[in-house]
Image 1: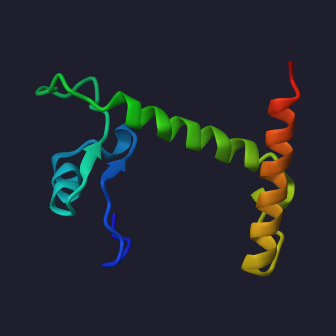
Image 2: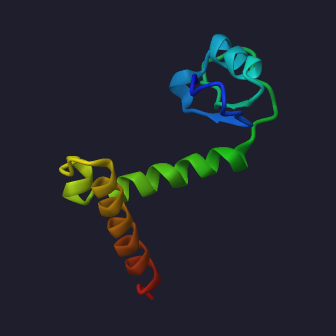
Image 3: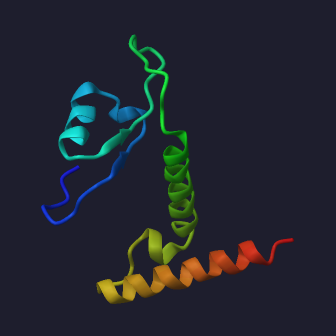
Length: 103
């Protein structure tokens, strides 16, 4: 959760593996809302959970999975950060084109 003093988080989104009171408290101390689903075996499960924010996390993970289908992205074959960003941009463009033209 530590990203630096100049970055102010509004929400910290994580999966069930990070479900602990310590992680939730650390997010609150950072001034962010913890969006972490509760494990099913937890005793004190509150009613409210920000499902809309958590769905965004799933979308990001799905996009990362699609990007990693490109070998040069998954293996980080590019030496410089500029070239790696370029390959990621090209892969994202291919994914976008494929998603638009599948009707």
